Image (cartoon, rainbow, N blue to C red; front, side):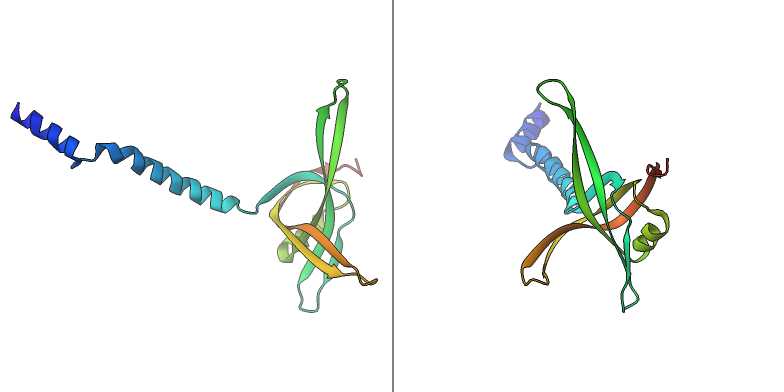
Length: 151
């Protein structure tokens, strides 16, 4: 009996800190979530069809860069129940080995999946105006379907 009262006192006095167990669990879950979320920062993943023939540039430094566009489609029904299609266009840039893969295997109409990051930049056009561009720098590419233009 005496040991029961001692253990109850110890629990109540906070020696065992049973009340903090959920705090410890939630803190560790926060750390896991933080690690997962930190890898998702500025991450873009898209599946779509290539909209134009990729433009390949070989820079003086020896690096290769490719610019091309990707169309993604969303389908929904309007208030009349008609099936509607919404197409979004994305500007893509690939460097190095990724650019070489795009040059070799990607053509207009090809279905691809990409992983990359969103970037914004500005430049001065020939007429002196400032132009703003948002593009996706591709870090990984996955070749999916056949070339729908050829099929």
